[in-house]
Length: 217
Image (tube, rainbow, N blue to C red; front, side, top):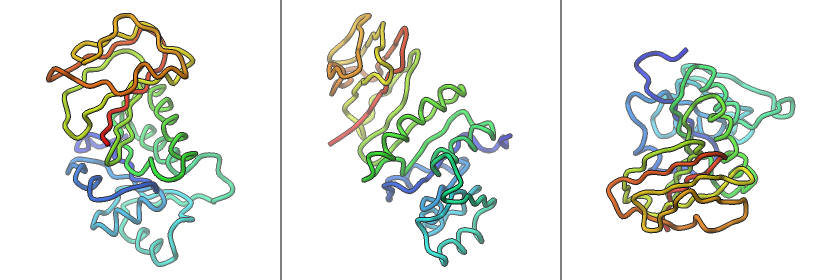
């Protein structure tokens, strides 16, 4: 189980990372480096509490450095595993009791990996955890009931997209384009590019899984 001193788990994986991700790491974060993400953390002066993956994206010297710096190290065979390194990291965070999880590097040039990582938000939700994917331009969460958003100049746009075939009872307050008990179906673009007109906004759904995507150009 988690130690009381750690408030959330931050997973850094092998997609797009940069100074923006380092600026969002807190002193009380439990750092999990997945594959190349572990090497990125070490190169930036961080010692991951846990490093795991098949490490097929790092060279031998980088792997030795990760092994020496990580508090705990788990290696997996690149062929004989069912899950991606990011999913391994997420499931390990859940296993250790974390219910607030942020994933950096989960979005990048590989659309298949990016989409798979969006789907991982459902794994966290099923486990009763709150997880999000974040990069310099996006922050993505999955909603099954309700949430409150505070205005954030980093991500001025808010888009709502169904992850399930349909989402019913969608109600928005504090947004430029409000909705009241609306139904959003898979493939509809009605929820794209909304924005807050109040310091805070509320999003509620009655049934279904709704992606809440905050973004900027």
